[in-house]
Structure formats: structure tokens, C-alpha cells
Image (tube, rainbow, N blue to C red; front, top):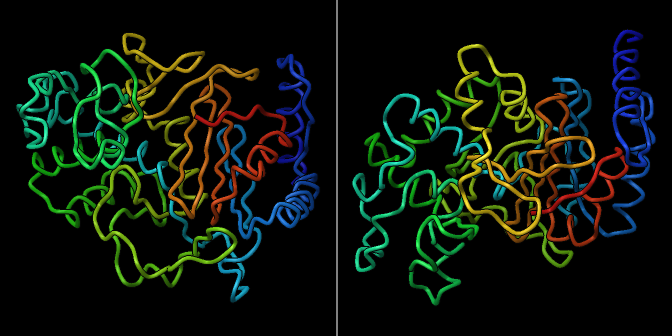
Length: 353
């Protein structure tokens, strides 16, 4: 225990020496203080449930669930309770895509219509410019969802010239991968389980729905009321349908920060800044799976998710091996500023897309 505390104190000292920002430092013993603050702020901000995992120096040093799975039943959350990861689904799927690139199943820069034309785009000749790299970096020209464009899928700009966050792009890429691997949704989940989930030592990361899932899944909440936990899109949604825990998602981040020798080259490619790609205004850039910004502590990879009645957030620093995963089972984790509060309490800046 003394050795663990010593390592954490050393980490805090290094952060204080290298950071120019005003931060509050915390030792392992002060996580109890963090818990008290989170409990207090959840009540004040009317947030029903939060679960988080904190990574320091390449290790998960803290995991904790706060609040309830359902405000009506009062059933408590645990660190084993499964959440909807929402758009945090995208980086995990992107990593799986990069495994297929490594195995020569897919070429990042080959026009994807050569693999599988999108029937909704064939009347626009610009669709022949779309590549997997563009789909991963949200520069394909596709909208976030076709519902944003009157229910019709269409290109908003010439592929590769601008940035537009796109769930549709990930779903198109998922269709291409399924076509190339000749698998249905369950088959794709099986491949994901074998090639990603098992390799990182995660217990539960599932995109497809089955009837056993609600037993260990928290309810979502909207406007202070629990939503239906039994009705769900049963498809493999590369952009949105991952169900997991903060601890298991933290294991995914650890696999990126401290890759095994056989995965090092893949991870380096996955995290490389796509400097030739257009990006949003300001300091944001893109890797093949995450937005990237320079914070006061260094280069941060991060992502956020919103599925209506769930919210999710993560960030990590590959150089230091530090990171955090926060899952909330309500629509107000971000609007209440609770996630921002937690990140700030731990001495870090808040970025949300």
C-alpha cells in the first residue's frame, strides 16, 4: 500500500512541476474526498447515476459507481453495471477496422465504393471519392444522421474537403466490413469479441442486443424519469450501440497507451494525427479514432457520447499513461456540468467535442 501511495505521490509531484495551470493535487487517500464531492454534486445537480474509472501511470487506480440504476426502484449501481457507451462505441470499432487494415482486408485509401457501393449515394459521382480514412475521420461529406437531411442520405460536401461528424459514416463502414468478412451482426460481434475484447482483457463489451442484457444494464433517464430498459435497437451499431462498463472501457484505453509489442505498430498508426485531413476550427485535430487536443498537461485524446438518456466521456494521455472514463445514466451528466466538475476536481481541463 505504501509503495502504491508513493508512486501516486510521485506522479502528482511530476504533474505539479510540469504543468503551468492551477490545479488541485490528490493522493490515493483523497479519493474519499472525491467521492464525497461527487455524491454531494450529484444530489445538487439531480444526476441519478455515475460510474467512473481513473487511470494513472498505465494502471487503473480507481473505479467507483455512484447513485442508482433506476430512480423509481432505487437499485444501486455497481462497477459491474453495464451502460450504453453511445458514441464511445466509435473508437473501439475504429480500432477493429484498423486490425482489418493490418490484415489486408481493407485499404484505408482505396475508394470504398469498390468494396461496397452505397445505394443511396450512387447518383452523386462524388461518392467515388470516399475512403475508409475519410469515414473514420468524419471527412466523408456524410451527415451525422440522415434524419438531419430530411431522411435522405446525401453528401453535404466533396469528400475530404471539410469536417462533419458522422454516425452515418461509421455505419457505412460497418456495412463494408461485414461485406468483406461475410458476417452478419452476430458474426461481427463474435469477431470483435475475439480480436478486441478478449485481447484487452475486458469482461463485457457488446454491440449486439440480447435478452439477457437488461439484467445487468442500468436504466437510462430523461427529464428525471427512467426510460424503458427492455426496448433497444438490436442491430450492431458501430457508431452507437456498445454496452460496457467504465472499467472495461479503461482497459481499451490502456491497450492504446501501453500496447503489447505485437500491437505497437497498429496503435501508432491508429493514434497518428491525420494532419492532411481537414479538421474543426481551433486546436482540434483527429486521429483515426479520437479527436485530439493539446491541453495544459499535454496531447490529449478524448471522446464524448450522447444517446439521449445516457452520456459518456473519456480522455487519455499516451505519454503519461493517465486517463479517465465517465459514464452517466441520464440526459444531464453534461448539462449539469457534473462530468466537467469531476475532470476539473482531478486537476484537468474539460473538453467536450
